[in-house]
Image (cartoon, rainbow, N blue to C red; front, side, top):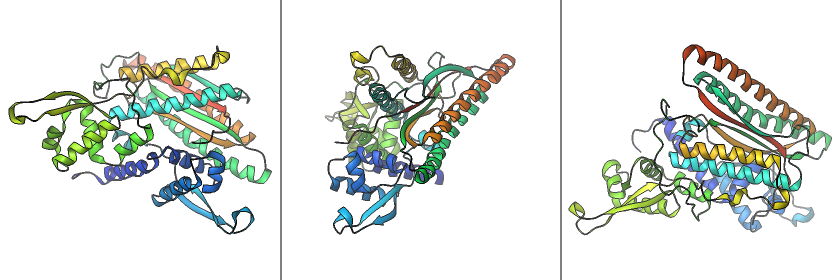
Length: 415
């Protein structure tokens, strides 16, 4: 679009690159796993599946073409490779959002991404609980708490959470070197960090705009979530359409008249595409006047399915009641309420992330120490913030902090 800054263009380019990763669920797993270690398409397929070796190989090549993977070495011919070379790759980066890129994503997509991310974490918690690994390691952690910050305390705390997430991968790298020397069998650990404004606060005085009135909140799409993201991220006009539909009911002719960007037919195709993948919902139609006999369709952005999708949260009766699962579901309620009331996205520097690490025993101890240090720093920031609030009268930011670190069972094969 004309008038975009160089920085904004760079972020839109990154979203287009992300669309390549999200176009196929398999690619998300490839990028995440190859950030931890090098693998060939063949060895990835043997461990994770993926439909067929040909399908996995095509995804490797597509990701490498767009800079997500880099070739590190080749082996063969020889052994069981029957004359074929085996090519090994590593991910160049994780498919994550920085705050600047996050701000370019429409509100309805941001909350949907956050809820989908949280549900995936829930599946890992449930799998670990069922496999008996959730509390198998000393120092395992799964908990949350609500604290109060002023604006300065919030900024310091969320910055500390961001730094902690980055430092976990430094421990992963160090563990890899130690494992190469010692031959120790690595453990698979899931780590998660969450920070957002709790739902108890009113909207008065918040920096962000009012919560958009989204269509059909709780209605889910049959299209895989990663593909929904891919279709939107690949086209900045689609992002603009959904962003406008967050704010008001809008039609394709109305968008074309106000923003242009393509022919009216091109804009209509984008509206229909965003409706098909579940980002837009038709809410009304108008006839008459300048429309003559033509029907003009109006759309609004859709919200995440957070009201009627409790199947992901179900546990076998034999596993209940489990205190750790009860704790996690209480955190789920905090996330759900914050999304529903709009406080979850009150600040663009909130945090929702989880990842898988391969660690040796020393790496696990260091990760737990990092988490304990973060908790101590948050408590300290909270005390200082409360003292400042008492002096200044600044509006407090009631905040939910969630942390998790536990051993995970081996990942299941992809269909």
